[in-house]
Image 1: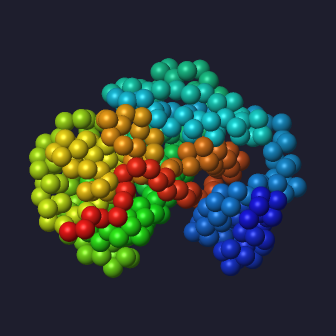
Image 2 (image 1 turned 120 degrees about the vertical axis):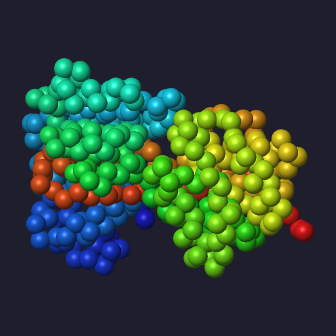
Image 3 (image 1 turned 60 degrees about the vertical axis):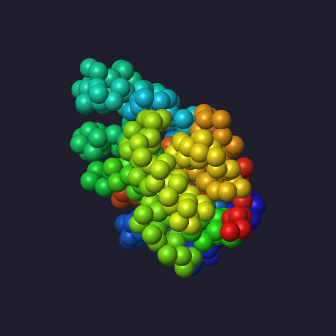
Length: 351
């Protein structure tokens, strides 16, 4: 479907809604529309590439108000990977009359941002229109920030704070990985990177279990190998006994692994190569994110490409919507992922 045909009627037809409902949901006139319907409309509009272009929306876009938006990045041990998020935000600045201020915060000093004297002048409450939050911030800090200014989070949910979420549809991404492996002939698929403490790992693991059920495959708890938050978030290299367990699971019939991240995938691949396994001839491995630059001497992972630039643009659009409509309901906008086929998947070997 081409962009010129993406209008409100196309969205309405796709969702089996009236054009009037779609129009109200997109314009902010949502008093008689429940939040679930509004969220569905915004998600579909983003997925189809709808451009907000009604006369009323154009009038809003042309209003003289300008906005100063802060992008707050909680700095981890490794630099923020997705510069494409920022590129997506930046491309919307002129159209939305926005100036962006990018601000890194050291993890053990994140409480300081609750005091204006620790912020750049442009991000203090009297000047700042709203915040886009990147990486996993402590819930208490997010709740405090959101109580005083509009906030949108990229990828990380904060269920107890009034913060919109814009991110990738990770469940759909795991479905793509599972379907890819299934189509290659794999019927025993493991998961490498189970970690209840990390939100995205929980989501991707639940997607893995759901995908197995959807495909009619048995779930074996022993086929889910745990990793620590340090492995998944801080790129810890050293593994404990995980590779010994993986080897036993392969001997027990596991022929493919879905990994919680690309980094986890490369750790697994490196460990298997060092033990004499051939990837993908003996074992198939898939990752998630397609953003890891350190391949650890492994072949390029088949993975999931996250629409980072679109996520950044949508986060900016949602935040300006919250600034203009402060009482709008909290929404989750999840954008679809794409499968990136590379060098680490193949049909299972004949046994």
